[in-house]
Image 1 (tube, rainbow, N blue to C red):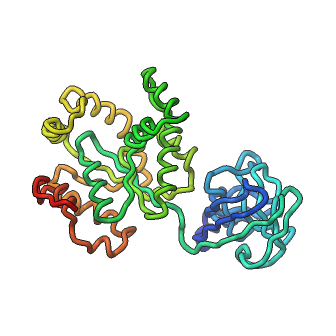
Image 2 (cartoon, rainbow, N blue to C red):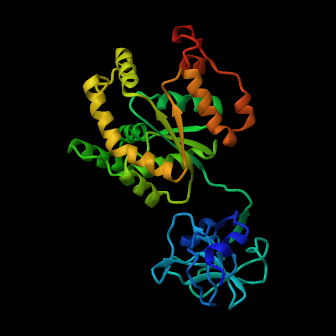
Length: 352
């Protein structure tokens, strides 16, 4: 008997994404991504699922990861029923909200759907995406002084990537004021760490805001620990596509030299050898296991950041090139980029 994994290898991968919008059951609206239902789940019609498939046809999960469970395992939220010969969209509790009787290979986008028993009118609009429409995210990690911020700013200046820093977003939220700012301030004043769910919420809100101008994002200094990883999965889930991690490797002595040089102008209280070693130990104990996690998943690109800045940037540019528009790749360096690379002094920079 053919194993589920062997059968799955013979199936074309599901590379379609679906947007459901305008329904009278708002919980059904949103982005749907290829299903990851395990191969040992059996549907009501007795058909075993395969990744991306249900009842022998393509199937989709909600991108936020929420779904009804059957025998403790998630069911696809948008799938085909062999019994009723219909595509259907399920509510969060698993009850069907919308259906359309048809034998098409893909959910119809040009024919009105029917409101089912647990749905509310109107029926939704269905849009089929032939390419992944989600924001693309690259996590950026490295020791203090490894050059993460500089390289991220260069990618923003030259390659059109969005650059997000969890620390910057928290500081901006605190200065903005409001209920969430008060909560963050009270947590910090009491000497506690801001929960990762709040940090991930700020990151995701900013990604959504910036998605109008770019699809590519560098998240600087994140995830720092397993709690960050878990919170990202809970808050963002599959609504964003994490491509890989850029990991800036750099010897401790080089980091020390850089931090001491930076201390002359940075004004940061933690730019000293004692603070650096404490931060480095925390990084080694909490962050390196996350780097190893991405290494095991073959989602880690390692960059020797002890090299000269131009060489490091060349490696970063190469790593991001497949997702970067050609016009950005061919654009000459801006004056600010030349300054960041040390090719021009900041005093020589003209007013741009």
